[in-house]
Length: 427
Image 1 (cartoon, rainbow, N blue to C red):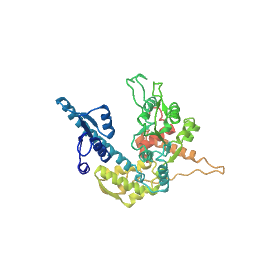
Image 2 (cartoon, rainbow, N blue to C red):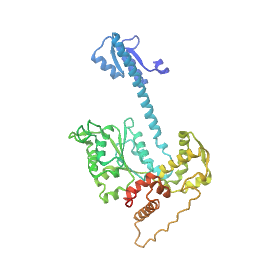
Image 3 (tube, rainbow, N blue to C red):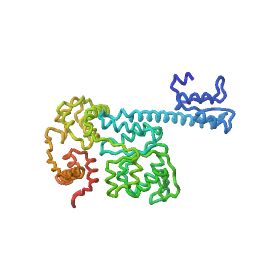
Image 4 (cartoon, rainbow, N blue to C red):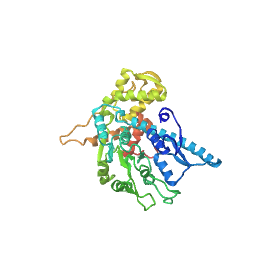
């Protein structure tokens, strides 16, 4: 065992009967010490029971002597397979450790009270099987919170399966979630396992759950209630053990009132609500995030940007960040690549951050004594701004996004959410 502890070994071959220690006991000790080191057990006294005992002890395989030329060829192939299996196990274990490190709570950057409160919620519920609904604007990092939930739970050794419900067409999403049997529909030439089955024992993350069709909402409700589903084209129920984490940037209570989302499904999902705050509500985190993204981008892109001059930093600190953390990350990546080294100056900032920017002054509506529907007013104002930018750019969404200081993806999401459509002849 001292050799196993001190040396790097690819494989151990041992006989069942050896002086000093029996082969199966050696395999057990090796498995406890180095679970990724493959062991092949050899014996001249083979039996079905002995082979089962060897595999239970942790052996990769069990071989019977004597060996002829044919069996030696088998042994050579088996040795290669065992070494490759051990390498893959070691890589997988390392990857799991890296994922857990990457998604530790303290690696979510920020110290603001709003962020800390959300992280405290994650920490309290991570090691449970309760269903979690993560809400927040686009770009706030909802998927990062979902990964933190999974990799800090007892299910961390199993898969985290992510499904973007808004990115998959409705006619394909059911098969993607629940799988299908051969012949279930045109081109279904074989059985296919769905994401729920793939996530068995682990976690399934349903992103943009608010975009799911009413028909699929009914089927998802049954999975949450009974932990069973039927693949498309099958009448046989499949049982699953999964933890469900869902996320949305939509206001689901509003969607319920508009009959776009089922109320019973909402209450099934909203067992543990976690709201990820927008970046404008945690401005004290902006300098920390800037430093973090600078370090990451310098390392990834091979650059040596040291920081921001004061005027450039003040300009970023005064921004409202409608695209949230994603917008900030994309901006830092762009600046690091283009600047290359040294300090980022005010002249380096793109619109709407650069020196030509003029502050926007909007005259707020007067508030009557009866009050004002705040969310409706803000929504109308936002819609008017987006429509104005689209009209000025003849519905060039990239240019409209630049006028508004938004990421193109964020603008597209808002256009879709508000149901804005171009006039005939424009797209």
